[in-house]
Length: 168
Image 1 (cartoon, rainbow, N blue to C red):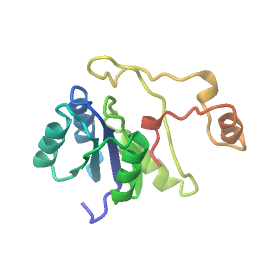
Image 2 (cartoon, rainbow, N blue to C red):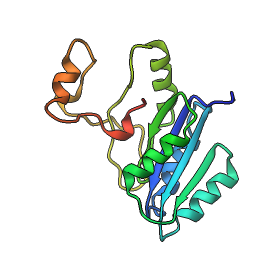
Image 3 (cartoon, helix red, strand yellow):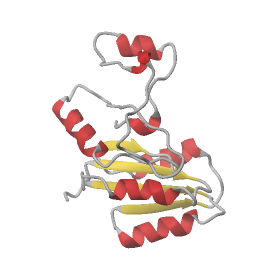
């Protein structure tokens, strides 16, 4: 791995100890191995700090930052951005997961299309274990290719980019 990773995954978490292992496992399972994952614990009172520490102990690509007082998800994500060293940033909510090839495929797309600032995909809801074999979900007006002003015009009506699907 180079000194700076290709992707920095930022996970802001507050009292998500029940779900965090699934999110962390999805990062560990990436086919792209050149990543770092920054877990920003926003003053959790559950097992989140222990789970983050265990991840760091198992794999040095994980790092953990802890706030002593709740600062909110935006400030936690901003702290993660400040610490990030990767060429690209992937936000991942602590109760979500990313498919094994997500980082590799999206980083390759951005590498091949230097004028693109972000790439996103569809998503799939899950309540227990994520099933990456099922088709993703989207609304008809969310399938945009960026040609012309389609994206800007659609974004003026509302956000169609789900945070965890984007690599920026």
